[in-house]
Image (tube, rainbow, N blue to C red; front, side):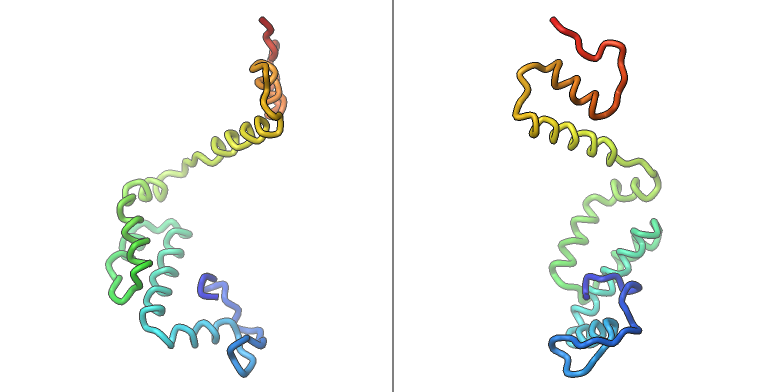
Length: 145
């Protein structure tokens, strides 16, 4: 429940939880857990603010998350340190909408073809299989020696 985004927690349905003697909503359980430790509460708040700024692509508020870190856990500080070392690259993802996802998907598909083929002896047949999988139409797909 602590990893669930704050706005996705159910606050209407009551159910029985393991360590709670009474029926409670998911929001009540999270609030009870956060009341136990202030460090956990601060870490939870920072995590949710960071998640929301990334989801809404809000660059100024993303930078503001790094200014209110008093009382966070060591693990969250280490994560934020990693994010701050890649600050410029993350900023580029906020401003530009380019991604290498399709290219990575193509590479993965080629690797799967290679793995399921148990090794191709002939490169041209491997090439033909890849072109067939990607539905590429060429005049001469298979060039023989």
